[in-house]
Length: 313
Image 1: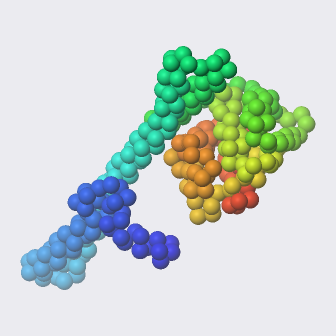
Image 2 (image 1 turned 90 degrees about the vertical axis):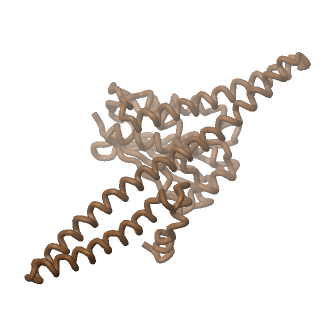
């Protein structure tokens, strides 16, 4: 831990502000306060014990035992408060993010409907406004689906079915879905795959959701014209998938947060204001539940490569 991080941890006021709590509700302040109380109890206990017990070794043993017990109780209580505070902070962030993300499509839908109802549009203009309605309804639907998925994951009700599937077929179906966006973004896509790859036992709908998320990110965070490379091959007892882009990349200091809920890199916000920061969290949870592993490497302004492995049936 660096000196700067230590100073941040010791800054009780800043920690309380992070959780949005008053001083008397803040875990860090309560930890210090309880520490002072523990020390007072230890001193008082020592004074009482030294007067009542003649053997100094027994006095020390009693005081040390009491000290250890109080410190453990103090730690357990404060950690519980800290977890509750963190949950409260995440809930506040969740409400803030969802409110912000829903406001934009709802406003667009309202505006488009009002314009269509006015009856002042030509046939060509009406088609354009119907397209705006469709896009924003799909955006809202996607956001709601992500929220429901995260909720199922958090509650432990997220279920996967297993069936024999070809990852090649799933990837090619996903590419087909994204062809209009690839064409509109002037991005070339290359898909390299080994011949006669074995099938796997997995949930095709959720695995396809993984491909969608990774490909969508690669397209949206590309810097103008570029190329996205997909690779699929057998690696030991696993199937290995990799997707590489030449986009904006992820700042090194922010890479440790990339799979966290609601996180979006600061440079990504400059290119795409829309997004909840839930996609990669969902991707990681899906791969984990499929008994696979996922990771990435990235360099700011150079590009990003995500890869994951899934066991062969």
